[in-house]
Length: 416
Image (cartoon, rainbow, N blue to C red; front, side):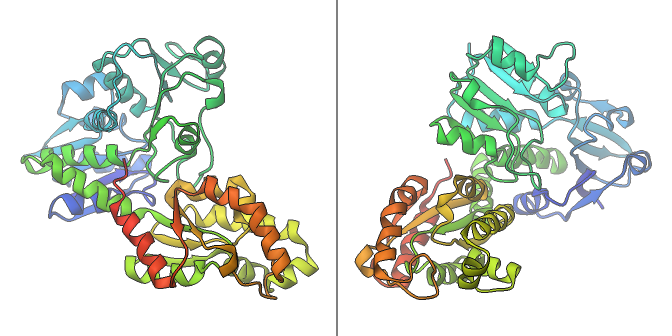
C-alpha cells in the first residue's frame, strides 16, 4: 500500500472515496491491531498515509519530524515518507476549522464545551482557542485533571454556547445515541459533531429539532483529506474542489425517505427514484413481511398492532444506518417519533401529500381497509406527516411526476 489510511476498524470509513475523488493515486484502507502497528511503522513501507482511531497518538514515537500543530495537539493524522524519514502532520485542525467557518459561526468570546478526551478533542481545543473562544471547557465521563464531568457541565456551565463533540458516541454502527443532553443546556447556539457516519448523528438531529445550527463531520472529513492530499502530492487543492467533492459525496450517501398515507404511491415513486438516482430501494413493510414470514394483515390479526409497531421500529432503526437508499415507509411509521429520528440520521424525509379524495382503501391494509377508516387515519396522521417532513411534496399527478418533483428538490439541495 503506497497511499491509504490505517486504523483499527475501518469498515465505516469514507476516506477511500474521498481521496479517490480528490486525486488519482490508489488509496487503500488497512486495518491494524496494536501489535501490527509497531511492525508497520518500523518497516515504513508506504509513501503517505492517514491515521485514524485509535492510533493518532501511538504513531508519534515512530516519527522523525512532527509539525507544530500536531505537536501542540499531541496527535497525528497524516504521515509522509520522504526518502525513508517520516513526517507527521495534523490536518484535522484545518478540517474542523473549515467546518465551523462554513457555517458562519464565530467562536470569539463564546463559551465552548468540547466533549471527549481523545486525540480529536485536543484538536478541537486548539481550534477553539485559535478562534478566540472563551472559556474552553473539556468534558469527560470520568473525573480527570483539566476536565469537567457532564454533571458539572449541566450544573455549573448550563449557559455554554457552543458544543463540539469529539467522542464516537452515536457513530455507526452504534447509532441513535447522544453524548450530551441538550435540554439541560438551554443557551447552546451551535453544535459541531466530528461524527460523519451517520451524516447527522443523534446529537445533530436533536439540535436541529430545537432550531440550533448543527452539522455533522463529513465536511471536516473532506476538508482535512484535502489538506492531507496536499501533503501527499505536494500540490494545492482548490477549495471549490473540496466543496464539489463534499456535495457529491453527501448526496450520494444520503437516503431519500418517503412518508405518507397508504396508496399515496410511496412504493412506485420509490422504485422510480431508485432507478434514476442509482440508489437501492427498500420498502419497510416488505422487510417486516420477510422478517415475520406472514402478510401484514395476518400480522395484525394474529399478533396485533403492538407487535407490528415494535417490528417496524426495529426494521427502520437498522435500515436507517445504511446509505444510498430510497426508503418507502409504512403509513403509520410516523406514529413513533424514534422512527423519524433514526431515518433523519442518513436521510432527507419527503411527505407525499396526496389529497384524501385521491387515496384508495384496500383490504390488504388492516387500518385503512375501507373509506371511513382511511379518512380517520388521514386526520390522525396528517399533522405528523407535515411536522416530520423535511419537504412536503405535491402528491397529485402521476407517480413519474411526483418522482421528478422529489428528484428536483434533492439535486437542488445545498446541504447547508
